[in-house]
Length: 196
Ligand SMILES: CC(C)(COP(=O)(O)OP(=O)(O)OC[C@H]1O[C@@H](n2cnc3c(N)ncnc32)[C@H](O)[C@@H]1OP(=O)(O)O)[C@@H](O)C(=O)NCCC(=O)NCCS
Image 1 (tube, rainbow, N blue to C red):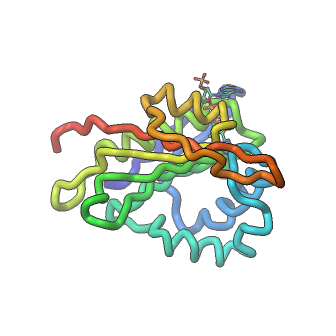
Image 2: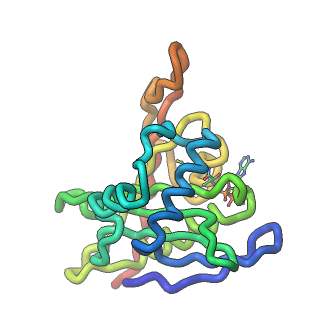
């Protein structure tokens, strides 16, 4: 099932659009990730760990299956009225049959567009898309999970408000620098899926 674009009004009065991500978004998605890594909030990567160029970045997304159109991936972006990319969110399903009902969620909003409601809108529409999707054989995603830094209070508040619960703590999961560690948190949401 393809995602139908949804218009959105941001808290600063700008209009925006949530739509499905495509391969053509590759360069803008890399620029978005770069901006988040530079802002150093909520991320686990360093700048020199990002792909060198858009081609390599797109190859990574392809390898992960993020552009498959068969219900394996649910990639969304939010753009402003001029088409500039403000954020992205995706759910990527696990490959093994016993794990196919589980999707892993990731989200990022450009530092200059945070706090305007884009993140919440992305989450709400992404979860609705995932919840209502059915595979050709009737299969569905019934569990969404994510990893979040324990110091990412904004994201934790957002996820909690949408029903995600903490399922575990990975102690000292991130090593920021010598002697500074941050816990990782695993959160999960069981989806109440309507009948197909
Ligand atoms: C976390 C993130 C996705 C939220 O997106 P956003 O567009 O900034 O969030 P929104 O404006 O939609 O706000 C969503 C919720 O986040 C929480 N939130 C936002 N700003 C907050 C703040 N300053 N303090 C505490 N909670 C905050 C609130 O629960 C808010 O809901 P509300 O506005 O209804 O009260 C975004 O800040 C981001 O990309 N951060 C950097 C990357 C990251 O952390 N990704 C997630 C990794 S797990």
